[in-house]
Amino acid sequence: MTHDAKPGRSRLDSVIRRLSAQRDGLAWASAEIAEIKGDVLEIGLGNGRSYDHLRHLMPERRIWVIDRQLACHPACVPPEADFLQGDADAMLLELTNRKAPIALAHYDLGTGHDARDHEIAAELSKLIAPLMVPGGMILSDQPLIGFEQLPEPADIPEGRYMFYRSA
Image (cartoon, rainbow, N blue to C red; front, side, top):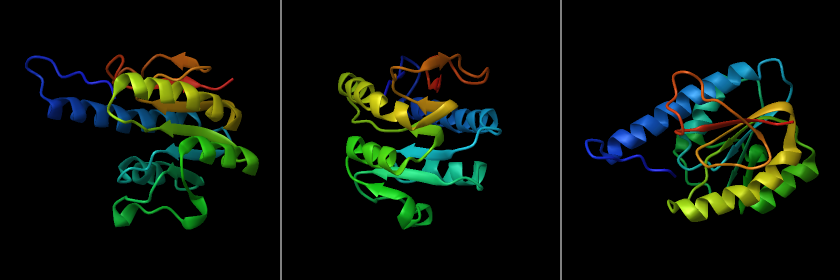
C-alpha cells in the first residue's frame, strides 16, 4: 500500500483517503461496466468491506472472492460456491479453468511492504488478464501491468487508486 502520510497528515487521514477513493472508484467502475456482461472478482477479501460494497452496487452479478483464509466479518461471508480459498496465483488459475468471464476486478492484496506488493501485483497481473472480458475494468491500490491505465475519476486524488481497462 502506498502511504501518503506527510507532515500534518496522520495515518488515519491516509486510510480515510484510501477508503474514500476505493468506495468512489468502485461506484464509478460499476457504472462504467453497466452494459458489459460478466462477473465481478474481489482479490483479497480481508474483513469484507469492499466485497460488501460490491454486493450493494451490483446485486445482480456473481462476485467471485479470492483469499488465503476466510476471516471476514460474519455479515460479509461470500457464498461457498463463490469463495476460492488459497494463494491468489493458484485461485486465479482455477478461475481461468472455470472460464469465469470477469467484467470488474478489484485487486486488494498487500503485505504493507511497497516493493514486495508491487512485485506480487506485477506477477498476478499476468493471471488476471486472461479472465477479463474486453472493456472490463480493474481497480487496484497497487500498480498492475499489461492493462490500459485510465485517469482517475475527478473526485479521486491522483495516485491514490489505479484504474485499468482490459483490451
